[in-house]
Amino acid sequence: MPHAMPLSPAGRPVRLLTACTCALLVAGMAATPAAAADSVSYDFESPSQKLPFMAINGFGRVLVGPAPGGRPGQAARVNIPNDGRSFKSELVIKGLDAGSHRFGFANYLPGDWQERDLDTIVAQWFSTQDDGGGIKPVVALSIHGANWQLKVHWMRGGEIQEAVIPLGAARPGHWNRWTFDITWSSAGRPGSIAVARDGVTVGSHQGANNYHRGEPPHFRIGAYRPSWRPEKGPSKRVGAAEAVLFLDDIAITSTGSPPEVRTAAPGGASPSHSPAPSPSPTPAGWPSASSSLQAGEAPVGGDTSPGATAPEARTDATAPGNAGRIGAVGGAVGASAALAGGAFVLLRRRNATGSPGSAHRRART
Image 1 (cartoon, one colour):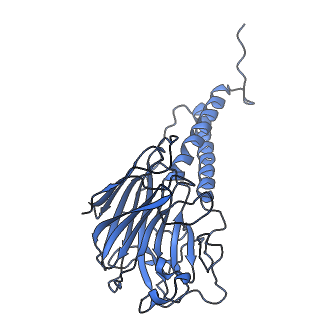
Image 2 (cartoon, rainbow, N blue to C red):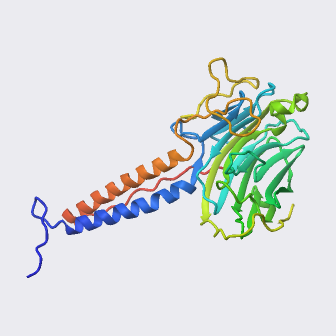
């Protein structure tokens, strides 16, 4: 005798509904977090969009306001005042894996940018070490004098190795559109970096590109002047104007799974390179060039890099990386609930159809 099909209180079969609901919950929770963890973007257009963790040493700022240089919409303004204490104002994006990613962003140096033969790092990929020690970023984009350059670091024989790749002349008063395609190396597999500016390839690197220990490299973007760290003394600040630049359209997309890590001695292949590419944003007009945090507005948090004498600010009480994970889980549950509801409607109205609308983002030029 066949088993009887269970009935709902209304006397309808529930097997299909239960099966659909379980399948949709599993599919939603399996797919959503992966996309959220390694694909993030910030266009600074929505007042409700939270900025990433802010790493600020001293009295620098990251504020949102009108984009300069004829660019429509909003952008982030980053500044580091020359006050003898400040040296870093960055947005920090963590939680990325050790695979392959495309990093895209736009930046703008004002027309009165001051050329100096000292690095101003505007984007860096930093690997937190097992012992918490702070060493050179594994990859860093900087402006040195009148030119862009890329520095890549890796470890060999217990010593840090460095490759310096020229990327062409800087153009103050011009929006630069950067693309970095990075595959991180492992102890047994070389990595690669391809750099494009305004759609033209300007540099590349093949071989080891990180230290192969600790956490996967995370992304920092903004302004950082290593020569301005207080422990290095005041001589490098004499005659220097404050650092001011603008950022927009940050987008990170995962393009591959992490490489297989094989058991091997630390180190990597010699590189080859070809030189030639707050809780809520604060809308409003830009403050004056000399503006900084006032009394009672001291940054909170802590800087784990060595030699820091000022606290590192953050704008969200959620630990870095947690917000994305929480949002991913919430999105998965919400989406699954909506899909389960759709399955119930299908049982009652098998002829009902519908398709969600598509959102269109404004094209940026």
